[in-house]
Image 1 (cartoon, rainbow, N blue to C red):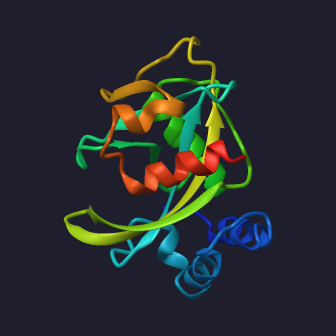
Image 2: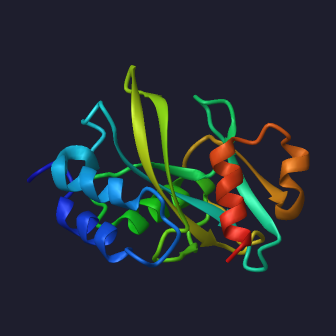
Length: 180
């Protein structure tokens, strides 16, 4: 069995989103996956795709963020594409469930933003080509934590007051979510 995900569904995702949002980087994302099929895996040290989701409550009044253990900042839930993932949305949903502890999360099928950023990854500096979604969950639902992570719900309207040095990509993602 091939340990890497099949690139075709991810390529289809990127090409079907044309015209479905203000995705400034979409052409570059489409080029990367077409030229570098291994960009779907973390094995491509020069840069690879990741998937993430901003988790909000159904009323869009609260947002849950994760204090990233390596980065040391409040971020949305997300990570690398794994062999069992068959789409960017599925990868983002899996990461969101694993990191938040909520099993019953709903995710929008089309991302709300694309963000490319340099990060330390696997002992080297790499570029994450992140596909960012919006997900919802009832914040009073039962959580089943499988990872020891620090998470917290914030008032969506005032999160920048509570976290004045909010990561710029998270700030853009929150603004995109509130403009839907």
